[in-house]
Length: 182
Image (cartoon, rainbow, N blue to C red):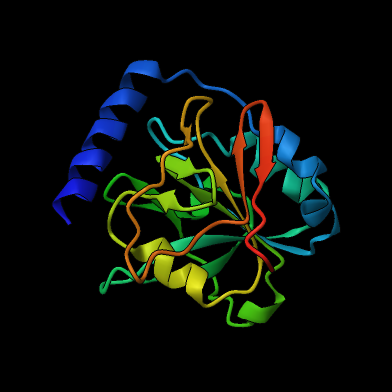
């Protein structure tokens, strides 16, 4: 879908121009994360919404932390992470865990995902590989997308059949929940 590709390129340029490192630590006060035992998150890089402080806090709170590892077919498997930078290996630009695969997907309570933009009903624009969409389709967890302060839009994003919405969007100052009739 060319319009989606063009929009993604524009969103990347906009993020590069507006990027400042900020914290999304306030999401830990959500009832979903407070009550979670197992949280899937990511290790941010570049201009992605930063997760270093979130991940450290999850460990301090005794949560099991999972990170994504991309497979050859661009799908994602969730891996138990011990919090050590030494157990991460770069896959391109992305730091990925080397640990044990987590197979009990039904036990994941929360998934924290990166996004370039999220619209007013929870549609998420990712990097374009579809990896997170495939992974999110297999979990019934609460899904929260992290975006910059200006990366929530009221214009509906283009959606394809495989795209998975999120339940909430978080900026550094806001947690916006979506009600999709569930």
